[in-house]
Image 1 (cartoon, rainbow, N blue to C red):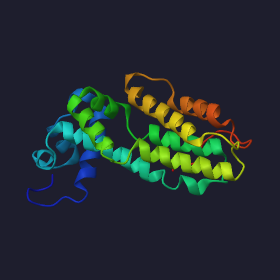
Image 2 (cartoon, one colour):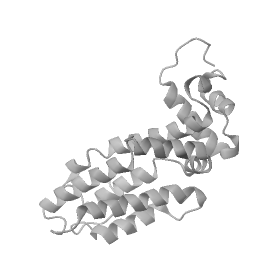
Image 3 (tube, rainbow, N blue to C red):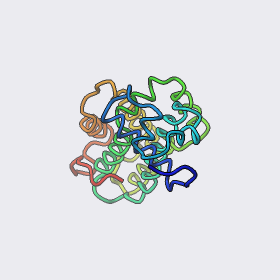
Image 4 (tube, helix red, strand yellow):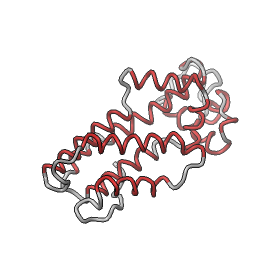
Length: 206
């Protein structure tokens, strides 16, 4: 247990990781400030000292995971010409779908205070689906210029269709959605086919 008054390195990430473990292991009903700090090995009041309650904490956890995934897709354009178009897109899709455990999504969706904070932050420009969509559009444009994607295709609409569907899958996966990987692969196949003759199997996630 960390002593009072002693700064804890990477406190936010430590608390976020602890909350994920509590949710996965015990379910949404077990997620309390005390359970999180106990799992993280911190003093009981640490969470409330840094967040204005559990709703803000859950919202910040979700926004942190969105931001990490958005950062990981920033280099997508550099993959143009490598592997297959479909494989690269599936890799990004899986990174999005794996960014949050379904239990975390469920908590965020069922706590109005948390979901409102998430919507407001994204509307104000917090990194999220818009950044991912822009990265995918830029990547598809680069592949189109290389001739690996049909000329004249509406890359912005393709990116919107992919990200919009990923958002839907992510937001409903806590309620017993199907195999998310299969859904992502089927969607990418509809949008770009097999990606220059290659299989749609994903390389390592970004």
